Length: 278
Image (cartoon, rainbow, N blue to C red; front, side, top):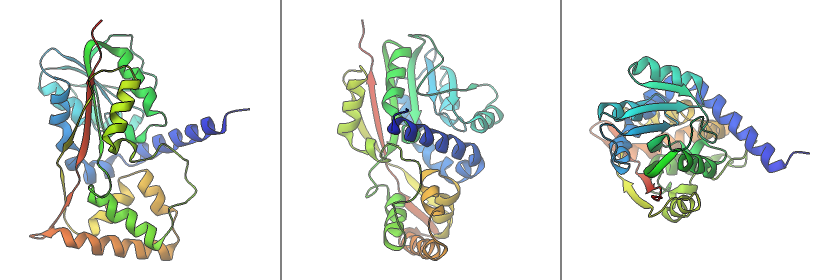
């Protein structure tokens, strides 16, 4: 008989993959200009430059891979969502993209000088396995780097959305259970996980980001149409609760309006570490 936790994680993996296969355009439109704000700091953290062999895991539409390519790195971008890979190939035809599994990389040991993941750790059933795989495919002295969202009280869009759901709806809904969404928002957890995967001297910094939206109502639409877990939470509410949640999110977002634009602080946590030289 299968381990219940294993079955649940398998269901979560399928839930995430199916979700990212169906929100390609919506994610790009709503989150693309936000998540790309962390790209250059992420690439700096692993020393991406001319001649570096770099693997971009959970590449999505390919923005990190393309930026690394512009620096002169030899890049491969992988994602478990085939439509995301197709979008990356369309946007950046000079970059190599493949469908791939972050938790079981199809590359030999010591194939890369750098491995990066921009907000991908949040969507994996076994993120610690992804770090172990990154360690395996890195050469000695190579570097890994990943970004996640800061705590919801700092990443304001999540605070607004989750507060509205808690107030007018319910958080305990019938969705596959995955790792805690804000697990790696804690620097100590980033450090612990990197050390456990075999890396040394981990470093964690905060990257300031601002999410600029055209209207207060755009926040609800972005969360409902351009995410997977949060969208799942919103879908599972009753019609009455959903309407109240939408109004609450829109009202709260108005407090961040500047010159007709909603500006929400959305900092990222950036963790990086080298693989110890032999």
